[in-house]
Image (cartoon, rainbow, N blue to C red; front, side, top):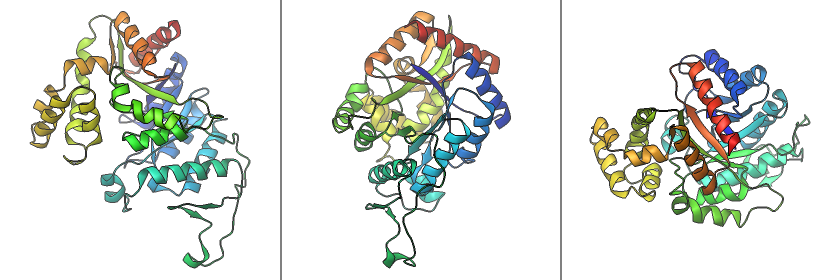
Length: 348
């Protein structure tokens, strides 16, 4: 199992990069660089490429609507060059609140668009002349829609790799099926080993049934917060505010994918209560309504024996790589937790 984490530069980007370097030495394999409506991810990824030696540097994630497919491909190829082949292109649809509210673009056909973006990116990386006539992207632009001067072009540079890994953050049945069919890695949310098959099993099987035979099996990233040791269980409560936000307040009452996943994971009654409380403005009560059972199953927090059991459960459910955050009062403690996890994973 590879170990990955999301970079957090709330305390300063350079400090975060210094921590990534320490985590790299402690056994970290992949660092995800976020982009919501914050600073852009590729700038930070380029800086990380210069400051690290071994970790895979992945966008986590770039919204597909915010750049043309060709720019997404160029960006990934450029980062792969800077990092000597350590880039991964993480893509996702984001949501209408961000795409329409911040970028001013219509949030339409996310699954179909993602499929076309992947096709075009791989065409660019193979240095083919880009010619694509999809429902959402037409390259070159048809003559009746522009000057008529567009012509097929191929990437000038020779990419380090002609097939850069693509990770997809997807939640809904159709998007997860498309991920299993087309992508190299999958980033689920609110993943628990016990509920994985009930929530996503059918979609994964449907997509894998269409997967190209020459593409490696889908790399599935999940895990949760990490704090290995005796008496660590109270740290699970730190997940309550974030869980309540997503389960209770993300999206509209009638369209909240996170709430749907939580409900399908065996917490149907709790999902409704959390949403009702959160939308009524009682965020504290919504946090308290998150079941202790869920907090345990969705984390790697507890004695070594407990964490080892969770790692076995994750692996048995299909998880191939870990996506975690490290608990600790400072960077040194978080690096120590990374090393603890690395040792446990290597002992499985």
